[in-house]
Length: 116
Image 1 (cartoon, rainbow, N blue to C red):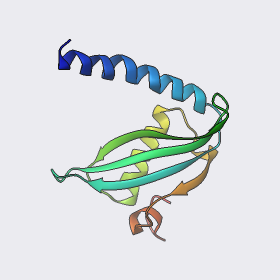
Image 2 (image 1 turned 90 degrees about the horizontal axis):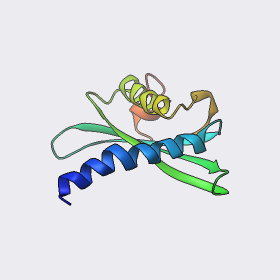
Image 3 (image 1 turned 45 degrees about the vertical axis):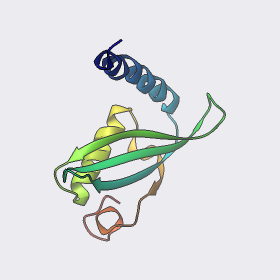
């Protein structure tokens, strides 16, 4: 098969199935968020989100990558909105979040206008 065909199978079939499986495993669980932002070599700003939770399916604590979202600015509000988008995609309620981990940057955990 051609590389393009493999890419389409991964993005259109496998990733959807894996997201659905993760969404089912996360349903109704308490979780912690690990979040950071970065600027890539093309100066595009991105925010990534990982989640830590107890999986009843695997009977252990799991760390899972939820996603990488491009953002225009890295203000607390923009980062919070990106986080909300990913949480909504996995049908997670912010009320179930019991922990929040970041690098401690002011836009993440500052006293005013931060994600926290």
